[in-house]
Image (cartoon, rainbow, N blue to C red):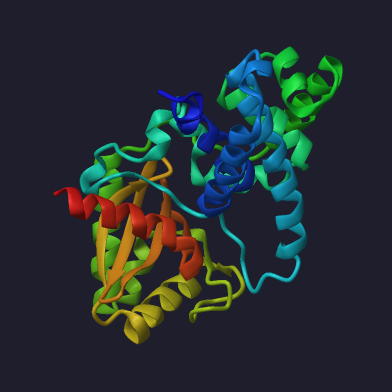
Length: 298
C-alpha cells in the first residue's frame, strides 16, 4: 500500500481537527497528495513525518484564511459534522481509523476555535495523536521549548471550559430526545419546557442560506417556542433519525431532497442543556455523501 493511503486516516484526522470542517480537510489531503506525488521519494527518509508535516502546515494556513472569512459569516458559526456511526450508533466513517474519537467531539471542536492556529496545532498533535513535543516542534517548524509553551497555553485556555467527562448514557439520551421530539411535534410548549434546563441555549448555523435564528436563543420558554415554531413552519416531510456524529449521539434530519440538518443535543441532570443545529447545506454535504455511500452498500 502507498504510504499516503496508509496514512490517510491519520492525515484526515489532523486536518479535520485543525480546521473543524471535513470539506477543508479533504481539500488539504488533495493538496498534500499532489505534493507527495511531486516529492523525491528517495529523499524522504520518514514518509510518516513528511506527510504529517505537510498536512499540519497546510491546515495552519487554511485555518488562518478561514478565520478571516468567518468575520463576515452570516449568523452563528459551527464546525462541520462528520458521521461516525449508523442509526442506533454503530461505528463507521473515516474518523474510526483514528484513535481517541472523543478528541473530535463537536463540543471540543468549538472550544478549539479559541486557540491560535499554532496553539491548536500543538494541542491537536500532542493530545489527540500523542506526538512528543520534539516531534510536534518538527511538524510545525519551531523549537521544542516553544512547542511545549504553545501546548501549555492551549491547555490553560481550555482548562476552565465545561467538558463532557463521562461517556453519554445513550439509552437515557435516546429516551429524553424521543420525548423532546414528541412534545415538539405536537406543539406542547409546557411539556417541552419540562424537558429543558432553565438556561438551555440553542445555536443554529445556516450560513444565511436557509431560514434559522442568526443569534443564540437562550432560556427554557424561548427555546421551546423557537423549536416548536420552526417545526411547524419547516418540519413538513422531515424525518429525524438517531445516528452518531463526531463520536457522540446526534439527530440527522432528512427531507425529500436529502439531509437538511444535523443536531447535537447536550443533556444534563436538569434536561436538555444545549442544541446545536448545523443547517448550512455546504456543511452537510460531506455527511450526505457518507449516507449515500452507506445506502449503496446496504
